[in-house]
Amino acid sequence: MPIPLLAQGFQEGFASIPYFYTVLKVVPWVLLVSALKYYFGGARNGSERLMHSKVVMVTGGTSGIGASVVRELATRGAQVILLTQQAPSDIFLVDYIEDLRRTTKNHLIYAEQVDLSSLYSIRTFATKWIDNVPPRRLDMVILCGNTAVPSSQRRTTVDGLDEEWQVNYLSNFHLLSILSPALRVQPAHRDVRVIFTTCSSYIGAKIDLKQVEAACAPGAFESSKAVKKPKTPTSLFGASKLALMIFANSFQKHLNSVERADKMPPCTRVITVDPGYTRTPGTRRWLTGGSLWGLLLYLITWPLWWLILKSPEQGAQSILYAAMEARYGRGTGGWMVKECQEVDLARREIKDEEIGKKLWQFSEKQIELREKEGAVRRALEKQEQESKKNGSSTSGAKEPTPGSRRSRKTK
Ligand SMILES: NC(=O)c1ccc[n+]([C@@H]2O[C@H](COP(=O)([O-])OP(=O)(O)OC[C@H]3O[C@@H](n4cnc5c(N)ncnc54)[C@H](OP(=O)(O)O)[C@@H]3O)[C@@H](O)[C@H]2O)c1
Image 1 (cartoon, rainbow, N blue to C red):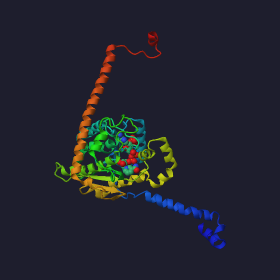
Image 2: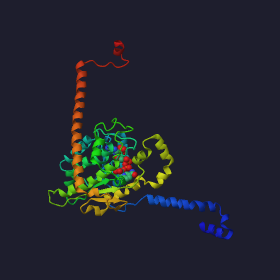
Image 3: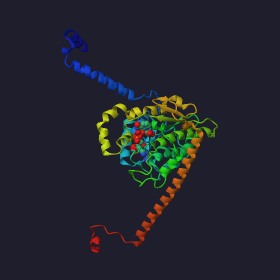
Image 4: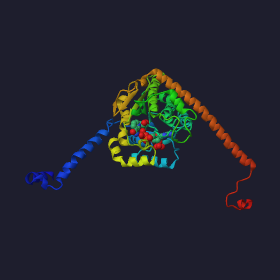
């Protein structure tokens, strides 16, 4: 077809070909957009590892990058345990898992309720996991759970901590501290990996434990809900990511330093992954600032975001690479992966043992204090509920149902 057209062009002139000059003008733009889209799409995971029989625990696996990771691992046969904020009986979650099972032809996908913004919820799940006898198989933990609160708002969790600090960092510290024996008890021949996800915001972040303390102190915000004009305006997002990476390094050292009962070398390796900028619900929430005007602006500028941000499938590639690449199943761990290749850390503090130790102690203290407060709060709530129940049962007087014969009589 193009050959007769070209022949016509040479014989009769290119102007004789319908739309020739229009096509000539459009083609370079199409090529440019395709080249940019390919460039911003990032590297692709080339590792081919079958995941049959592997047990993978994932936080943040119901949306964004985590959901794409889960879909790919499930397609490759892994048994997936999703740690979700909703209870497994939640109808949307039931639907989501049913759909995932059907489309991946993998029935080994389950959900466990773990609210990362509640220390109690994490402890309840993790202690149940490690209490299992014999110890359960666990090949991989992928930590994609994340929150990015728009900069005009700050939020506190049920434990009274800054939400970004707790969900992005402290929850991972708490979960892995409790699960650590379950990871160390895996047979020495097993290739166990813990994958942390981070973001390039760690590069410019400052970690000041006093500032974190202030942001997490009672009354740091005007109410427990999202509020504008906070007393502590600084976002802890970058700090939470830097803290997570410092912890990842300390956690690897901790795993390597504990002697196994069988005297074999440790088999758990920690890998930190930066997936790159991706179009996910979290990114959208952050870009729109959580407002309707922001959403409108986002929709108008959507072609730009489509071009320069990765799709969730593209964002998942580096995590899948860290989960599948054979060389991460050997060695002492503690790698950083970006664009499907190992990269150097941009901050020296991450490898600093003294900073790691200080942060570990700070986190342990923060958790201990908040868990104690939480236990007292729950006990008081329970007491209050019981006294209400007892009060209503001793009075014996049942509230009349509105519209009933008894309620009309009492008028
Ligand atoms: N997106 C990017 O541009 C980008 C760039 C660099 C690094 N990263 C990193 O990649 C990871 C994933 O990012 P993403 O953009 O996919 O995140 P996202 O879209 O914000 O999704 C976060 C996930 O965490 C879950 N989650 C939030 N709060 C939770 C809680 N309290 N308890 C349990 N689960 C909770 C969410 O559950 P629901 O589904 O129930 O909401 C969701 O599945 C993060 O570590 C992020 O820092 C992302």
